[in-house]
Image (cartoon, rainbow, N blue to C red; front, side, top):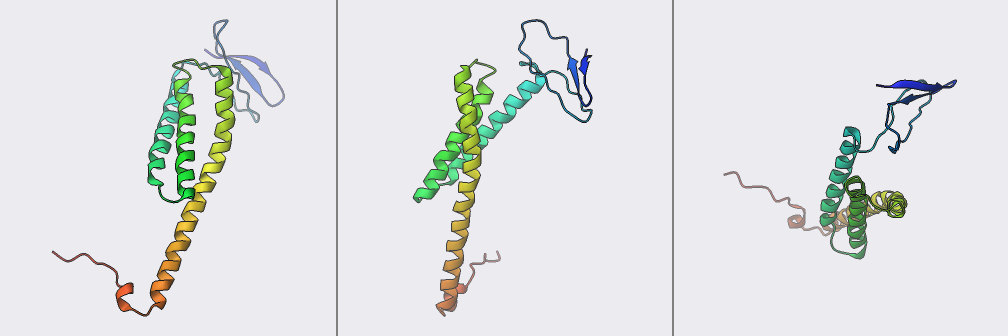
Length: 155
């Protein structure tokens, strides 16, 4: 049961009747939005952990798509690091990790979640540019065989 504990000009805090000694984080929003306390080991916390677990698994699997030159290998290893970083959120509620490790993972995640999309965009942009140059080369060679598209046989 939620009880209103303190209201200001644009915000309210709600108390969920959490027992003493339980770690809670009070969430306060402006413009009249009222949110209860976030208590660890609850359904929303578990759902968040599972979501980060799926995200980490997806990033680890997406890393397998990149191989070849140095830039693609960088993308591969950074995707792996980002996937492992996301797994910390899944593991932390089950096996309590040291606070320093969780904070270091958060700082690393900020860097990785910024760098990886930029690096993947550069890899795809270079792939598109190299494909366009190959098409241009085939078009200017004058050989019709270079321009034919392989079509499946009607069977």
